[in-house]
Length: 550
Image 1 (spheres, rainbow, N blue to C red):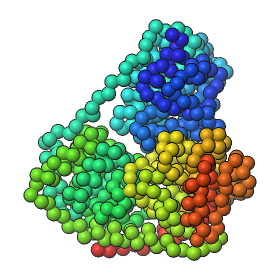
Image 2 (cartoon, helix red, strand yellow):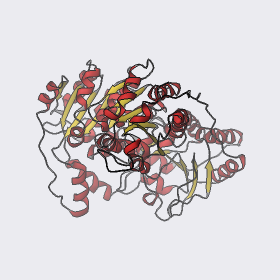
Image 3 (spheres, rainbow, N blue to C red):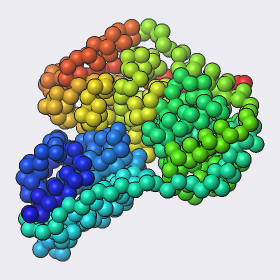
Image 4 (spheres, helix red, strand yellow):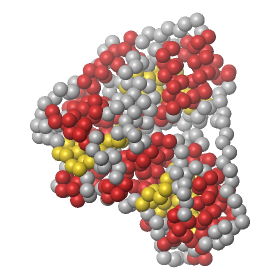
């Protein structure tokens, strides 16, 4: 069997459904082999970065691996931002790059660089195929590593001369394994600490959005009443309507939800990655008793030094705690601060729901209307920028993986290509991406991909003609900001040029109806909203004067 054919057969054996990318000369044999596959669909993108973001969203939504593909040299470097984003946010991904012939890798040669070494810092594993007979082992290992908690990106490089060779090897059958579970003794210790707590709180992280973990977490909270503060990426791990949902935390400045963290004597961190929200911001005195529950031991940090570490499968650990709660003769906590936090934050979310403005629209009003327009299982994707802070704070969720935010590597340009992949994975759900005007234009070329695929997506752009988040942070720190302004295209002409439907909304009262119209249109639609970012510094000022209530 030709090595490139073997490579594709191995991918098929792993259940790979999609590969996104831009081919090149050095992976031509692989592409011809892929063309014959009846199980894997290749999605041609307009830039490799878009391909990586698409593979990332596929991984987030399914827990399985999709591929992103580029050729050697600039094709590989164009992938790296999306790959880093996926790896840091723990989405499984398979990165496939071509390479020149092994006969010229040792010397100065056209487009030759050490791609594997370049990918090593942003992947869980990166390797090159040194012999065609090793392909089955390499692919089996790569997919297993990508899926193993905590998931992430893996990279395989296939040199062009090896792709042409014949091999007698055959694909390896995937063998799944069960994740290890915590020991009873450590669960008993954690439960004893919890029973003696007065004001416990749960800080839920990215690991909690797995379906089994979310179900067990909800059961635990129903039994105990303990409130859940979610990181940006953990939205939906508990239902936003539950009394124990204390919404999200993650703004660098102090926020209402921090009151619940301040009052806590015991913090259960569940599936928490400190890359999202550093413990110095919620445990500055390093005086809280932390119960760390995660797939891996805790990262070492002076503000995050858990006395109790429960290491193993998250869902099973929570099930074990639930068994102990059921067997206990009732446990009671003082949840007064928790109730006050939920009450105050709910008021924040509702504050501008009835705004009537023309010319510019407040971020809070936009998010309120978006939440009303989207169903419990529909999917919102946030790009990175000032709008991300508003989405993270104000857009709450009923179900896991219904608000996708990059919050580790935090790359702009994520939302448009991500929305295309979300529609491929969940074609029966409404998909809405929200970007700033800067972030949207970073991967604007994927508008053509969306049109070609007839993606049923809506992309909303918040227009302020500037790098708004940078302006916000500079002004908060220095009292002014540098020149961060730019011009934009005529949005409606841009939409028409790509064959999209276009909507421009400058009256806040028209926004909900426009959203409903766009979300029910066939094919891709663009909504542009002139945004009132004067609210940024108003929020900073208000939070700076905030006093916790009870």
